[in-house]
Length: 200
Image (tube, rainbow, N blue to C red; front, top):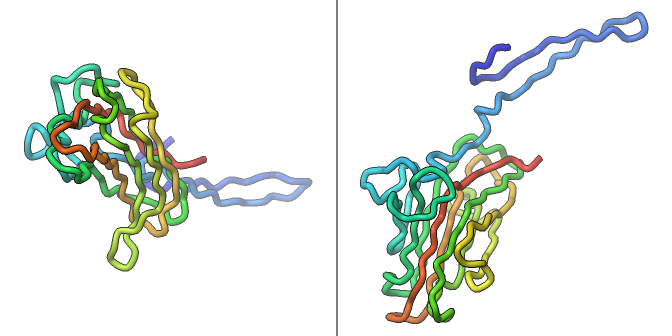
Protein backbone atom coordinates (compact mmCIF):
# COMPACT_ATOMS: atom_id res chain seq x y z
CA UNK A 1 0.00 0.00 0.00
CA UNK A 2 1.18 3.47 -0.79
CA UNK A 3 2.30 4.97 2.55
CA UNK A 4 2.92 8.53 1.31
CA UNK A 5 1.47 11.22 3.55
CA UNK A 6 -1.51 12.28 1.52
CA UNK A 7 -5.14 11.43 0.87
CA UNK A 8 -5.58 7.80 -0.10
CA UNK A 9 -8.50 6.97 -2.37
CA UNK A 10 -9.67 3.40 -2.85
CA UNK A 11 -12.26 2.32 -5.40
CA UNK A 12 -14.02 -0.86 -4.42
CA UNK A 13 -16.72 -3.05 -5.94
CA UNK A 14 -19.13 -5.21 -3.99
CA UNK A 15 -21.22 -7.98 -5.56
CA UNK A 16 -24.72 -7.98 -4.07
CA UNK A 17 -27.43 -10.43 -5.30
CA UNK A 18 -26.43 -10.36 -8.93
CA UNK A 19 -25.62 -6.65 -9.02
CA UNK A 20 -22.44 -4.68 -8.59
CA UNK A 21 -22.25 -1.69 -6.30
CA UNK A 22 -19.30 0.64 -6.64
CA UNK A 23 -18.09 2.63 -3.66
CA UNK A 24 -15.41 5.28 -3.38
CA UNK A 25 -13.82 5.42 0.05
CA UNK A 26 -11.65 8.31 1.17
CA UNK A 27 -9.16 7.70 3.98
CA UNK A 28 -7.08 10.36 5.67
CA UNK A 29 -3.52 9.31 6.42
CA UNK A 30 -2.78 9.74 10.12
CA UNK A 31 0.15 12.01 9.23
CA UNK A 32 -2.40 14.76 8.58
CA UNK A 33 -3.79 14.59 12.11
CA UNK A 34 -2.54 17.27 14.51
CA UNK A 35 0.67 16.34 16.27
CA UNK A 36 2.79 18.07 18.86
CA UNK A 37 6.29 19.21 17.99
CA UNK A 38 9.01 18.06 20.41
CA UNK A 39 6.55 16.55 22.92
CA UNK A 40 9.29 15.19 25.19
CA UNK A 41 11.34 18.42 25.14
CA UNK A 42 14.40 16.60 23.83
CA UNK A 43 15.26 19.29 21.28
CA UNK A 44 16.43 22.73 22.40
CA UNK A 45 15.25 25.96 20.81
CA UNK A 46 17.20 29.20 20.46
CA UNK A 47 18.73 28.57 23.91
CA UNK A 48 19.47 25.33 25.77
CA UNK A 49 16.81 26.09 28.40
CA UNK A 50 14.08 26.57 25.77
CA UNK A 51 12.28 23.63 24.19
CA UNK A 52 11.97 23.77 20.40
CA UNK A 53 8.37 24.11 19.24
CA UNK A 54 7.14 25.52 22.56
CA UNK A 55 6.67 29.13 23.65
CA UNK A 56 6.89 30.09 27.32
CA UNK A 57 6.08 32.94 29.66
CA UNK A 58 6.71 33.76 33.30
CA UNK A 59 9.61 32.79 35.50
CA UNK A 60 11.66 29.62 35.79
CA UNK A 61 9.92 27.26 33.38
CA UNK A 62 12.93 25.73 31.63
CA UNK A 63 14.00 22.81 29.49
CA UNK A 64 16.30 20.69 31.66
CA UNK A 65 18.79 18.03 30.55
CA UNK A 66 20.28 17.27 33.97
CA UNK A 67 17.21 16.80 36.19
CA UNK A 68 16.06 13.31 37.12
CA UNK A 69 13.93 11.32 37.08
CA UNK A 70 12.67 11.64 33.53
CA UNK A 71 9.56 9.92 32.23
CA UNK A 72 11.36 9.04 28.99
CA UNK A 73 14.37 10.24 27.02
CA UNK A 74 16.84 12.53 28.74
CA UNK A 75 15.11 15.93 29.02
CA UNK A 76 12.16 17.40 30.87
CA UNK A 77 10.47 20.73 31.39
CA UNK A 78 11.26 21.96 34.91
CA UNK A 79 9.37 24.51 37.00
CA UNK A 80 11.61 25.94 39.75
CA UNK A 81 8.90 27.01 42.17
CA UNK A 82 11.38 27.82 44.94
CA UNK A 83 12.89 30.49 42.65
CA UNK A 84 9.62 32.30 41.84
CA UNK A 85 9.59 35.88 43.13
CA UNK A 86 5.96 36.92 42.48
CA UNK A 87 2.46 35.45 42.24
CA UNK A 88 2.20 35.54 38.43
CA UNK A 89 1.68 32.37 36.43
CA UNK A 90 4.31 30.60 34.34
CA UNK A 91 3.71 28.20 31.51
CA UNK A 92 4.24 26.91 28.00
CA UNK A 93 2.07 26.63 24.93
CA UNK A 94 2.12 25.31 21.38
CA UNK A 95 -0.06 26.16 18.36
CA UNK A 96 -0.96 22.90 16.65
CA UNK A 97 -1.48 22.53 12.90
CA UNK A 98 -4.19 20.48 11.15
CA UNK A 99 -6.88 20.69 13.83
CA UNK A 100 -10.34 19.76 12.54
CA UNK A 101 -13.31 21.90 13.54
CA UNK A 102 -15.57 20.11 16.02
CA UNK A 103 -13.28 17.09 16.41
CA UNK A 104 -12.51 16.21 20.02
CA UNK A 105 -8.90 16.02 21.20
CA UNK A 106 -7.22 15.04 24.45
CA UNK A 107 -4.11 16.98 25.42
CA UNK A 108 -2.02 15.55 28.21
CA UNK A 109 1.34 15.65 29.94
CA UNK A 110 3.07 13.75 32.73
CA UNK A 111 3.97 15.62 35.92
CA UNK A 112 6.27 14.71 38.81
CA UNK A 113 6.35 16.87 41.95
CA UNK A 114 9.04 17.66 44.50
CA UNK A 115 6.83 18.98 47.28
CA UNK A 116 7.94 21.46 49.94
CA UNK A 117 8.12 20.29 53.55
CA UNK A 118 5.50 22.90 54.36
CA UNK A 119 2.49 22.39 52.03
CA UNK A 120 1.64 26.10 52.10
CA UNK A 121 4.86 26.75 50.18
CA UNK A 122 3.95 24.52 47.24
CA UNK A 123 2.58 25.81 43.94
CA UNK A 124 -1.21 26.11 43.93
CA UNK A 125 -2.22 24.46 40.68
CA UNK A 126 -1.45 23.11 37.24
CA UNK A 127 -3.98 23.97 34.54
CA UNK A 128 -4.19 22.23 31.17
CA UNK A 129 -6.07 24.23 28.58
CA UNK A 130 -7.20 24.10 24.95
CA UNK A 131 -7.84 27.33 23.06
CA UNK A 132 -8.99 28.45 19.60
CA UNK A 133 -8.72 31.85 17.92
CA UNK A 134 -12.16 33.47 17.62
CA UNK A 135 -12.52 36.98 16.16
CA UNK A 136 -8.78 37.47 16.52
CA UNK A 137 -8.73 36.56 20.22
CA UNK A 138 -7.73 33.41 22.07
CA UNK A 139 -10.85 31.70 23.41
CA UNK A 140 -10.86 28.85 25.95
CA UNK A 141 -12.23 25.61 24.50
CA UNK A 142 -11.58 23.39 27.52
CA UNK A 143 -9.72 23.66 30.81
CA UNK A 144 -8.89 21.30 33.65
CA UNK A 145 -7.34 22.42 36.93
CA UNK A 146 -5.23 20.14 39.09
CA UNK A 147 -4.52 21.26 42.64
CA UNK A 148 -0.91 20.55 43.55
CA UNK A 149 -2.03 19.58 47.07
CA UNK A 150 -4.04 16.69 45.56
CA UNK A 151 -1.16 15.26 43.50
CA UNK A 152 1.11 12.53 44.84
CA UNK A 153 4.78 13.57 45.14
CA UNK A 154 7.73 11.76 43.58
CA UNK A 155 5.79 9.82 40.98
CA UNK A 156 4.72 10.51 37.41
CA UNK A 157 1.03 11.35 37.08
CA UNK A 158 -0.83 11.73 33.79
CA UNK A 159 -2.75 15.02 33.52
CA UNK A 160 -5.27 15.50 30.69
CA UNK A 161 -7.90 17.84 29.29
CA UNK A 162 -10.34 17.12 26.45
CA UNK A 163 -12.35 19.35 24.14
CA UNK A 164 -13.22 20.20 20.55
CA UNK A 165 -11.86 23.36 18.86
CA UNK A 166 -14.45 25.74 17.49
CA UNK A 167 -12.45 26.10 14.25
CA UNK A 168 -9.22 24.79 12.74
CA UNK A 169 -7.01 26.68 15.22
CA UNK A 170 -5.82 24.84 18.33
CA UNK A 171 -3.45 25.93 21.08
CA UNK A 172 -2.44 23.66 23.97
CA UNK A 173 -1.25 25.21 27.23
CA UNK A 174 0.28 24.18 30.56
CA UNK A 175 -0.21 26.90 33.20
CA UNK A 176 1.30 26.84 36.70
CA UNK A 177 0.01 29.13 39.45
CA UNK A 178 2.53 29.62 42.27
CA UNK A 179 1.95 29.99 45.97
CA UNK A 180 0.82 33.55 46.84
CA UNK A 181 3.39 33.70 49.64
CA UNK A 182 6.27 35.81 48.34
CA UNK A 183 9.66 34.84 49.72
CA UNK A 184 8.40 31.55 51.14
CA UNK A 185 7.96 29.28 48.12
CA UNK A 186 9.34 25.77 47.85
CA UNK A 187 9.21 22.65 45.74
CA UNK A 188 9.47 22.04 42.01
CA UNK A 189 7.53 20.35 39.21
CA UNK A 190 8.86 18.25 36.34
CA UNK A 191 6.91 17.80 33.09
CA UNK A 192 7.56 15.25 30.35
CA UNK A 193 5.99 13.45 27.40
CA UNK A 194 3.17 15.75 26.33
CA UNK A 195 0.69 14.20 23.91
CA UNK A 196 -2.31 15.08 21.75
CA UNK A 197 -4.79 12.41 20.68
CA UNK A 198 -8.10 12.49 18.79
CA UNK A 199 -11.05 11.29 20.83
CA UNK A 200 -12.34 8.10 19.26
